[in-house]
Image 1 (cartoon, rainbow, N blue to C red):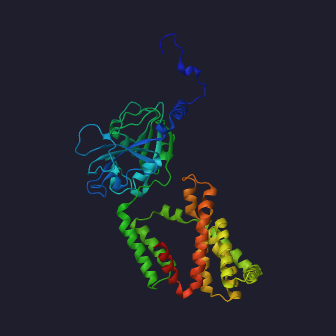
Image 2: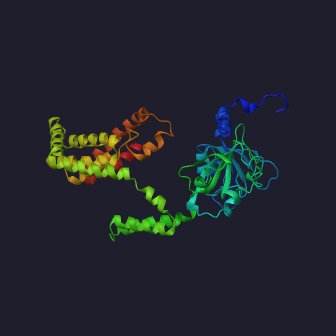
Image 3: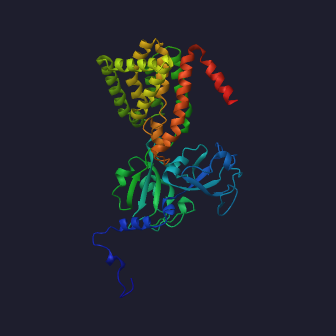
Length: 427
């Protein structure tokens, strides 16, 4: 500061961290500008996107992203504002997207697009070891004032910058030409060891990994699909048991690189397995203690007292199953209800296979609760839903499913009449 002028840093508490000051100033800016990364993507000449319109390629209205500009492959100079949906993509076009880290991550999963920078080809990392990492440039970082190219970022950090986020505005420039500033958030394509190596690096104020951000392996699509088809074919042919076929298929995918050891371990949902195992235990206890038989007798007698007979028992079992399914999940509900349903079928003279089909359908009808099935939970938070939304839309679906399921089970060998009636109603 000039002589006699107060030092602006003097007003800061003695323990304040300049990096935290930068982060707090970032948070005070316009939220949309702060949360938007600018990510240039290149259309591959031989890829699936070349020759398609923007609308036909599905690149308009992507979740968490929007297209801000396009630089045509045969055009010189600056990019033009995002053209209309009828613009035809060509190999070499540069598409500028703005969005959050999750949106940028989804861009990598679109066949026919690749990051604009070609530095990724020089990364000496296996694809399965790569991750997306967010790194904030620190106040005293040696990177400040340098372009990405001059900083030799890939060589120094074994990481490639694929998108940059800057408070107060979006950066529309080639990644290598961007002059880094304090507070810039870099989205890096790097190895899983980056956090361990650079968490305390003075160049960065904050480092964090984006979950589930390993790049897709499009080249492994055919081997993975082929392995799955062979597994099903071998099982259907009766050559081996399904468990053995699945185990062998998993081994082939591990050996071929379609699946990593970490991914295989994380795919085992121990909480689900434990829940199902516990449900089987409770189911066995209910059967041996007579509780299942008592509940089954109550259901049967209720159906007989109402004069509904077999349809009444089927409806009662269906209702009990889907209510339980919406509370504890479909697998546990099926395990708990099976002895009850089997007892009810025996007392009412219903074929056990028919009752099993009904139980299977009812246990898959978890429409009324976000906790009834994994996919319900997956959309519950990101979609901004509330519990009442599941009740409002799920209850009518539940009623329709119950009527159709009970009707098809009652028709038995004439189940195809249900299909004829359904298609006739639609037509």
